[in-house]
Length: 322
Image 1 (cartoon, one colour):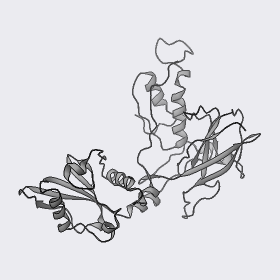
Image 2 (image 1 turned 120 degrees about the vertical axis):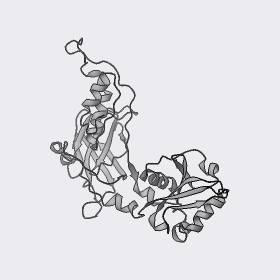
Image 3 (image 1 turned 90 degrees about the horizontal axis):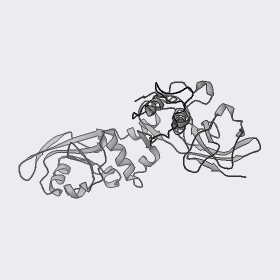
Image 4 (image 1 turned 180 degrees about the vertical axis):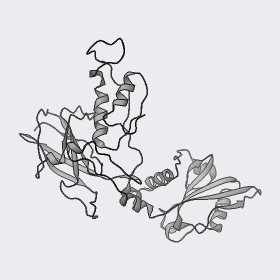
C-alpha cells in the first residue's frame, strides 16, 4: 500500500510480482496517470532474473477499481427532504458506522433504524422531518416512547445519532418492560458541521501548471464533491472550451467564474466509449483566455474531463467527428 502513490510505481511493481495493491493520492493528475499506467502495463518492462533485455511484461492488468473515499455531495446533504438517504449515509459515516440494508426497522419495530453498532441498533434522528427539527427534542419522554414503541423488549445499548441542538440530555439508562437495563447513548455532532466542515477547511489547489504537478496537496476536514460541467468542440488546431462551470469559491468566498476555477483538462484522444484512458494533460496556464487549446493527433472520438482547482472532476465529455 502506498498512500502517496504519485505515478503508481508501487502498484505497477506489485502487479508484476503477482501481489495485491492499494495506492492513494489526492492529486487528480496522479490518479489518472496511475490508471493509464495500469491499463498499459502489458507494454512495460517485465521483472525477474530470467527476463531478457527489453522483454515486455505482456500481460493485461488484473481487474481494479478507482474509488473516491470520504467524499460527500454537500448540496444533496443539505436538501434533507429530497435526499434523506444522503444525509443518513453522511452522519453514519461520521461515527464509522456502515449502513445496513436489512429491514432493521422491522427487526426492532422502530422507524429510523439504519445501522447497528456492535450488534445494537443505531437510530438516526429524523431532522428531515420539520416537526422533529423544529419542535421535538430528545428527552426522557422521547426515550420512554422508544421503549413503548418497540414493545418493551429492547435491552443493552441503543444509539442515537443526532445534532447536539436536538437533544436535551446525555447518555441515560432506563429499564425495559421486563426490568432489564437499556442504555441510551447519544452520538452527537454540531449541526453546523454540515456547512462549516464543507466550506471552511483549507485545501491546496490542484496544480494549474506542469512545474507544480508534484506539489504536496493537503486537506483537513471532510472532502465534498462539487459539480463540474465542461463542453468542448474541435477546431483546426485542437479543441476549444465552449462552457465550463464549477461551484467552488475563491478565498474571499466568491464563486469562481469562467475558466478561473479550472486547473487542468484531461484528454483521451481516441476514447473507446467505455474506459477513459488519459493521453494528454492540458494545464490551465496553457489554455488561452477564450478557451482554445492546441492539440495534435485527435481522432474521430475524443473525450475530455475537466478538473477544477479543488479537485472536483466533470463526467467525460465526448466529442464526435465534426
